[in-house]
Image (tube, rainbow, N blue to C red):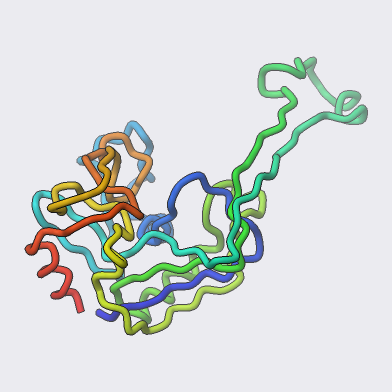
Length: 228
Protein backbone atom coordinates (compact mmCIF):
# COMPACT_ATOMS: atom_id res chain seq x y z
CA UNK A 1 0.00 0.00 0.00
CA UNK A 2 1.03 3.61 -0.60
CA UNK A 3 0.41 6.90 1.17
CA UNK A 4 -2.07 8.82 -0.97
CA UNK A 5 -3.66 12.24 -1.09
CA UNK A 6 -7.29 11.98 -2.17
CA UNK A 7 -8.81 15.28 -3.32
CA UNK A 8 -12.43 16.10 -4.13
CA UNK A 9 -12.91 19.19 -6.33
CA UNK A 10 -16.36 20.55 -5.56
CA UNK A 11 -19.12 22.25 -7.52
CA UNK A 12 -21.29 23.24 -4.54
CA UNK A 13 -21.03 23.98 -0.81
CA UNK A 14 -21.00 21.03 1.59
CA UNK A 15 -23.74 20.68 4.19
CA UNK A 16 -22.07 19.23 7.27
CA UNK A 17 -22.00 19.84 11.00
CA UNK A 18 -19.30 17.23 11.71
CA UNK A 19 -16.02 15.93 10.32
CA UNK A 20 -16.25 13.82 7.13
CA UNK A 21 -14.04 10.71 6.93
CA UNK A 22 -13.30 9.12 3.57
CA UNK A 23 -13.75 5.60 4.95
CA UNK A 24 -17.43 6.33 5.56
CA UNK A 25 -17.86 7.52 1.96
CA UNK A 26 -16.21 4.34 0.65
CA UNK A 27 -18.37 2.09 2.83
CA UNK A 28 -21.47 3.81 1.43
CA UNK A 29 -20.15 3.38 -2.11
CA UNK A 30 -19.44 -0.32 -1.61
CA UNK A 31 -21.96 -1.69 0.89
CA UNK A 32 -21.65 -5.19 2.24
CA UNK A 33 -24.24 -7.95 1.82
CA UNK A 34 -27.75 -7.39 3.10
CA UNK A 35 -29.58 -4.16 3.82
CA UNK A 36 -27.95 -0.91 4.85
CA UNK A 37 -27.73 -0.50 8.64
CA UNK A 38 -29.95 1.84 10.62
CA UNK A 39 -29.52 3.23 14.13
CA UNK A 40 -31.39 0.19 15.49
CA UNK A 41 -29.30 -2.41 13.64
CA UNK A 42 -27.40 -4.62 16.14
CA UNK A 43 -23.65 -4.02 16.00
CA UNK A 44 -23.08 -7.74 15.35
CA UNK A 45 -25.03 -7.41 12.09
CA UNK A 46 -23.02 -4.48 10.68
CA UNK A 47 -20.75 -5.75 7.90
CA UNK A 48 -17.61 -4.20 6.46
CA UNK A 49 -16.83 -4.96 2.81
CA UNK A 50 -13.20 -5.11 1.64
CA UNK A 51 -11.85 -1.62 0.96
CA UNK A 52 -8.66 -0.56 -0.87
CA UNK A 53 -7.38 1.22 2.25
CA UNK A 54 -5.41 -0.06 5.22
CA UNK A 55 -6.67 -0.71 8.70
CA UNK A 56 -4.98 -1.49 11.98
CA UNK A 57 -6.15 -3.04 15.25
CA UNK A 58 -4.63 -2.56 18.68
CA UNK A 59 -5.69 -2.44 22.32
CA UNK A 60 -9.15 -3.84 21.56
CA UNK A 61 -10.07 -1.34 18.82
CA UNK A 62 -9.50 -0.81 15.10
CA UNK A 63 -9.77 1.96 12.54
CA UNK A 64 -9.04 2.58 8.88
CA UNK A 65 -5.81 4.27 7.77
CA UNK A 66 -7.63 7.34 6.59
CA UNK A 67 -7.63 10.88 7.95
CA UNK A 68 -10.54 13.20 8.47
CA UNK A 69 -11.09 15.84 5.78
CA UNK A 70 -8.59 18.64 5.32
CA UNK A 71 -9.76 22.11 4.28
CA UNK A 72 -7.82 24.84 2.45
CA UNK A 73 -7.29 28.26 4.04
CA UNK A 74 -9.95 29.84 1.84
CA UNK A 75 -12.67 27.52 3.15
CA UNK A 76 -15.29 29.30 5.23
CA UNK A 77 -18.49 28.48 7.03
CA UNK A 78 -21.81 29.53 5.56
CA UNK A 79 -25.52 29.19 6.14
CA UNK A 80 -28.27 28.47 3.65
CA UNK A 81 -31.92 27.45 3.93
CA UNK A 82 -34.28 24.91 2.44
CA UNK A 83 -37.75 26.39 2.07
CA UNK A 84 -41.13 24.82 1.39
CA UNK A 85 -44.17 27.03 1.05
CA UNK A 86 -47.25 26.34 -1.07
CA UNK A 87 -48.34 29.08 -3.42
CA UNK A 88 -51.93 29.78 -4.51
CA UNK A 89 -51.74 27.27 -7.40
CA UNK A 90 -50.56 24.54 -5.02
CA UNK A 91 -53.45 25.22 -2.67
CA UNK A 92 -56.01 25.14 -5.52
CA UNK A 93 -54.61 21.84 -6.81
CA UNK A 94 -54.39 20.17 -3.41
CA UNK A 95 -56.57 17.06 -3.25
CA UNK A 96 -56.89 17.26 0.55
CA UNK A 97 -57.01 19.93 3.19
CA UNK A 98 -53.71 20.61 4.93
CA UNK A 99 -52.43 22.58 7.90
CA UNK A 100 -49.57 24.98 7.04
CA UNK A 101 -48.07 24.78 10.55
CA UNK A 102 -48.04 21.02 11.14
CA UNK A 103 -48.12 17.63 9.47
CA UNK A 104 -46.64 16.52 6.16
CA UNK A 105 -48.01 19.56 4.34
CA UNK A 106 -46.52 22.14 6.69
CA UNK A 107 -44.41 25.06 5.55
CA UNK A 108 -40.83 25.18 6.73
CA UNK A 109 -37.60 27.15 6.58
CA UNK A 110 -34.75 24.76 7.37
CA UNK A 111 -31.34 26.33 8.17
CA UNK A 112 -28.33 24.48 6.76
CA UNK A 113 -24.75 24.91 8.06
CA UNK A 114 -22.44 24.79 5.04
CA UNK A 115 -18.73 24.70 4.24
CA UNK A 116 -17.89 26.80 1.19
CA UNK A 117 -14.65 25.50 -0.29
CA UNK A 118 -13.30 24.68 -3.76
CA UNK A 119 -11.92 21.33 -2.59
CA UNK A 120 -11.27 19.02 0.35
CA UNK A 121 -8.69 16.27 0.73
CA UNK A 122 -7.73 13.28 2.86
CA UNK A 123 -4.48 11.44 3.64
CA UNK A 124 -4.96 7.70 3.08
CA UNK A 125 -2.83 4.57 3.11
CA UNK A 126 -4.22 2.38 0.36
CA UNK A 127 -4.10 1.03 -3.19
CA UNK A 128 -4.33 3.80 -5.74
CA UNK A 129 -5.99 2.03 -8.71
CA UNK A 130 -8.86 0.32 -6.84
CA UNK A 131 -9.44 3.47 -4.79
CA UNK A 132 -9.83 5.61 -7.93
CA UNK A 133 -12.36 3.12 -9.32
CA UNK A 134 -14.40 3.05 -6.12
CA UNK A 135 -14.53 6.84 -5.85
CA UNK A 136 -16.43 6.97 -9.16
CA UNK A 137 -19.44 5.87 -7.10
CA UNK A 138 -19.20 8.86 -4.75
CA UNK A 139 -20.85 11.74 -6.68
CA UNK A 140 -21.33 14.00 -3.65
CA UNK A 141 -20.35 14.35 0.00
CA UNK A 142 -22.06 15.66 3.13
CA UNK A 143 -25.79 15.97 3.80
CA UNK A 144 -28.66 17.13 1.56
CA UNK A 145 -26.92 15.69 -1.51
CA UNK A 146 -30.19 15.24 -3.41
CA UNK A 147 -30.62 19.02 -3.23
CA UNK A 148 -27.31 19.49 -5.05
CA UNK A 149 -25.04 20.17 -2.08
CA UNK A 150 -21.53 18.72 -1.89
CA UNK A 151 -21.45 17.73 -5.58
CA UNK A 152 -18.02 16.47 -6.64
CA UNK A 153 -16.67 17.62 -9.99
CA UNK A 154 -13.57 15.43 -9.92
CA UNK A 155 -11.71 12.96 -7.72
CA UNK A 156 -7.90 12.93 -7.78
CA UNK A 157 -5.80 10.22 -6.12
CA UNK A 158 -2.11 11.13 -6.01
CA UNK A 159 0.95 9.54 -4.45
CA UNK A 160 2.14 11.45 -1.40
CA UNK A 161 5.54 11.66 0.29
CA UNK A 162 3.83 11.99 3.68
CA UNK A 163 4.50 9.54 6.50
CA UNK A 164 1.75 6.90 7.05
CA UNK A 165 1.36 8.38 10.53
CA UNK A 166 -0.32 11.43 8.90
CA UNK A 167 -3.43 9.33 8.27
CA UNK A 168 -3.81 9.18 12.07
CA UNK A 169 -1.81 12.01 13.64
CA UNK A 170 -0.44 15.22 12.11
CA UNK A 171 1.85 17.71 13.88
CA UNK A 172 1.08 16.03 17.20
CA UNK A 173 -2.71 16.26 16.83
CA UNK A 174 -5.27 13.57 16.06
CA UNK A 175 -6.04 13.58 12.33
CA UNK A 176 -9.08 11.32 12.60
CA UNK A 177 -11.28 9.82 15.31
CA UNK A 178 -8.95 7.69 17.45
CA UNK A 179 -9.80 5.12 20.15
CA UNK A 180 -8.83 6.46 23.56
CA UNK A 181 -7.22 3.07 24.26
CA UNK A 182 -4.58 3.89 21.61
CA UNK A 183 -3.20 6.96 23.32
CA UNK A 184 -0.86 7.51 26.22
CA UNK A 185 -2.00 11.12 26.41
CA UNK A 186 -4.85 13.13 24.91
CA UNK A 187 -5.78 16.74 25.60
CA UNK A 188 -9.48 15.78 25.51
CA UNK A 189 -11.59 12.60 25.29
CA UNK A 190 -15.26 12.23 24.39
CA UNK A 191 -17.51 9.32 23.45
CA UNK A 192 -18.62 8.12 20.01
CA UNK A 193 -17.76 5.78 17.10
CA UNK A 194 -14.26 5.54 15.62
CA UNK A 195 -15.37 3.41 12.64
CA UNK A 196 -18.28 3.79 10.19
CA UNK A 197 -21.16 4.29 10.46
CA UNK A 198 -20.22 7.22 12.65
CA UNK A 199 -23.85 7.89 13.57
CA UNK A 200 -24.52 4.43 15.09
CA UNK A 201 -25.03 4.62 18.89
CA UNK A 202 -23.94 1.00 19.43
CA UNK A 203 -20.42 1.74 18.18
CA UNK A 204 -19.68 4.41 20.79
CA UNK A 205 -16.39 4.13 22.67
CA UNK A 206 -14.12 6.56 24.47
CA UNK A 207 -12.35 8.42 21.66
CA UNK A 208 -10.16 11.38 20.77
CA UNK A 209 -11.60 14.04 18.49
CA UNK A 210 -9.62 15.23 15.44
CA UNK A 211 -7.48 18.23 16.34
CA UNK A 212 -6.72 17.16 19.92
CA UNK A 213 -3.12 16.78 21.10
CA UNK A 214 -2.20 13.08 21.38
CA UNK A 215 0.65 10.70 22.09
CA UNK A 216 0.15 7.21 20.67
CA UNK A 217 1.17 3.95 22.33
CA UNK A 218 4.38 2.45 20.89
CA UNK A 219 2.45 -0.65 19.75
CA UNK A 220 0.12 1.51 17.67
CA UNK A 221 3.02 3.42 16.15
CA UNK A 222 4.70 0.13 15.18
CA UNK A 223 1.56 -1.11 13.41
CA UNK A 224 1.21 2.16 11.50
CA UNK A 225 4.80 1.82 10.22
CA UNK A 226 3.97 -1.68 8.94
CA UNK A 227 1.24 -0.33 6.63
CA UNK A 228 3.52 0.91 3.84
